[in-house]
Structure formats: C-alpha cells, structure tokens
View 1: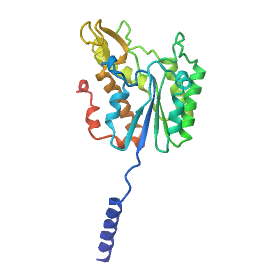
View 2 (view 1 turned 135 degrees about the vertical axis):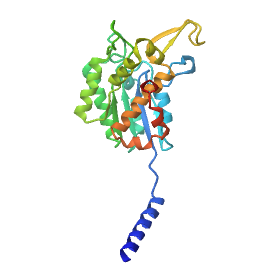
View 3 (view 1 turned 45 degrees about the vertical axis):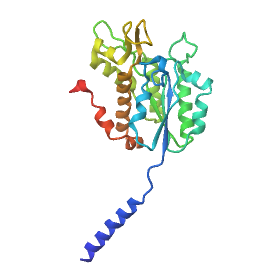
View 4 (view 1 turned 180 degrees about the vertical axis):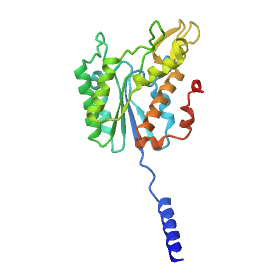
Length: 260
C-alpha cells in the first residue's frame, strides 16, 4: 500500500514539474548562401529559393533569417560584410546553414574562390559560429539540371561538393549532401519531368518572362519546396535538436507523390 502511494506521489510530482517546466528557448536559424537559397523579389517570380518555403516548417520558437544573396560566393559574402552581422548576432542554440559553391567554382566570375580559399572560408564560418555556441551545418551546393545523352544526371559541382564533404568530416560538422540528394531527385523525375522543378517557362506563360525562360539552375515554387523537404528530412536524420521544432504537418508534406 505504502509503495503504491509513493509511486502515485512520484508520478504526480513529475506531472506538476512538467506543467511548470520552461518552454524551449527561442532560436534563430540563419541561412547563408547563394541564389538557389535566397529570397526572390516579386519581379523574379516564379523563381524561388529553397530558403523561402523552408521558413514555414517550424514552430513559433524558430525564426529563420535568410541572408542568402544572388550571385554570392564564400569570398564575396565576406567581402561585402554580409557574414559579419550574422556572426555578431549569433547566440547559444542558434544554427547557421551554409551553402555555397555555385559562384565559387566559376573562374570567369568575379566571385570565383579558389579551392583552398573556399575551404578556409567554410572553416571560418564554422569556427565563428561555434565560438558563439551555435551550430554550423554544411550543405553541398544543390544540383543543376543536367543530363547526359542516356538520360543520366550529371554532377556539375563535383570538386567543390567534395571540399564541403571533406571539411565536414575534418571539422566534425553536420553535413547535408544536397548535391547528391537533389541529383537523385532529378533522376527520379527524369529528363522531361525534372523541368517542372525549375524556372522554365514558354513565351507568354508568365508576365515576368514574356519571352519565356529556360533556367536549369534556379527553382520554381515546387522545386524549391522539394529541396527544402530534403533539408528537413536530413535535419531529422542528423538528429539535430532543431528537428524537435519542425511542425507535425511537415512530415506529411515530405512524402513525394511520385513515390506512391
């Protein structure tokens, strides 16, 4: 009898404590990267960065602050003083999702970042994030739509994606391999259907692009959501604390209708 009383009292005490426990602290998830992630101006719609739908998958304890900018590389992001305000604002528990490469890897662009420098910038982002007790997450550059004559997806970021993977291993940083995973998604869709994920328009289809558009790099709303869902799934797989703040409806949305 006494043991039953003690057990009941313990359960009631735990329930009482849980009722008054503090809610999770509010955090900010910073997105730093290029045009495939960035917020678009209305004049560019239906072009959509994957960071745009990403914001809607979290509960009220999370603020997603998308600092990604079109055409930026790791080098230009720092040179233009875009990283420093993020580093200054970071607080314990925050996250920084880091996805560069599209502009770093092109030697003809002003934003070109040689391989060694690219790695050093990634390490800088990691170190300065950790210094604030925040969590860095490295992301390989998302795939472009490119297929060979046999209909097989071709990688266009092989060198720079491998630098991201190696840096993640060496620095023991969570890695989201968006390059490989988005390539797999494009392969699943195939040569023609994969166009449905990108900002591809025939003449007269959209007022922003009266002459049409054939873009194999930037996403439309559907493509951006698919990429955001890949990132969300990996947040869960990596068992980041952030996964506990994903709203339940996101689980249903991550089911690909083509997989049925």
